[in-house]
Image (cartoon, rainbow, N blue to C red; front, top):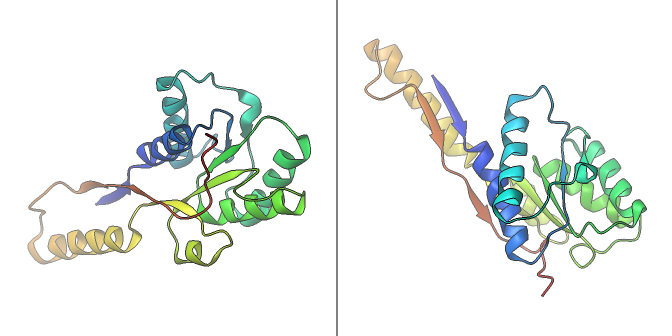
Length: 181
């Protein structure tokens, strides 16, 4: 039994969301190498850039852990370099919150100077300032699906549907992204 989320699709959606808001200098924050889930998310970022004709820029990849502390470091680095980056996609809400804090500590205003999107849609997103736009992987439904499959296998000895299920993801719009046009 394996219940997953559309990891590649999630970062594709968040990157396209930024592009649709006229951002073309979009950073990716995560130390993805060696991590299958984060590598899939990185692939979604690359796919959205490529489809939109935006060149991939390795200097826009910030290989920090997808943690609050990693986000703070990435946010400081992005803001401190005063480069062209106007948007950041992350692989975890807690990292996105750290990016917002690191950038804020370096004098940036979120989302005016830097738009940010998280991934997970934790309840915490609605309490940040600004409220964090995020990719929802519907964790409660993911857990329920896994438990239902497991209980079915325990009770009957088999499954009536495939044991690998990929859950849909969707963007939850809040306040952490602005349009550049």
